[in-house]
Length: 103
Image 1 (tube, rainbow, N blue to C red):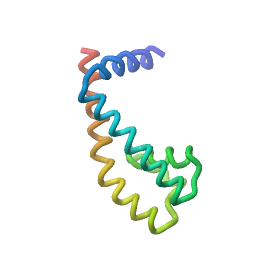
Image 2: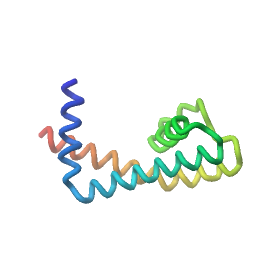
Image 3: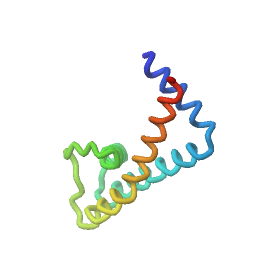
Image 4: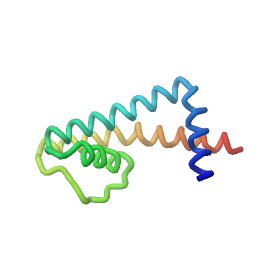
């Protein structure tokens, strides 16, 4: 619980930074864009689409669901190439803010 509270404090502090807010907005946009695409093309529920978008861009990739259509597979290739860099940048920035806050 203490770790969660500390994370929330770091997030509140980070949200005061204009660049961090822009990066967070871009991450949310990319994840939601992917979710909407998978809902429409793969005919998945919003939760399945959101889940797949997040596990794909964070490179977890459980493999329990995967695109079945050619359009979905092609989109996923581009989605990974574009989104992975943005997600890595966001996670790195958040990690840096966390370590700076704790030092």
